[in-house]
Image (cartoon, rainbow, N blue to C red):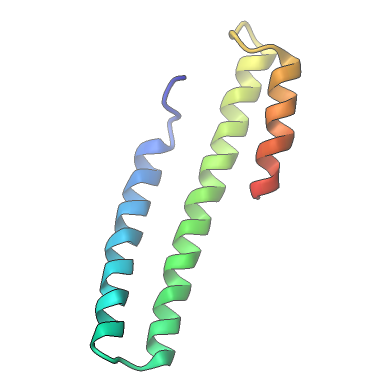
Length: 89
């Protein structure tokens, strides 16, 4: 399977979220305030959700384009996969 155009940007977002999550662990180890930690966890959660949404949308665009054109995918397989991946939106 070929790499989707959005993968490099998603990787960058997830690596940023990974670093942010490590800093939150540090905040917990330092006994920082729960409100501050909860706010930072919310920011990481939003970043991951955004990365997931971008991945799913790009996959839908990419795979449906392949199925409707001369790509190697059969339309039936693309539709089945489309239904499956939409569960993650």
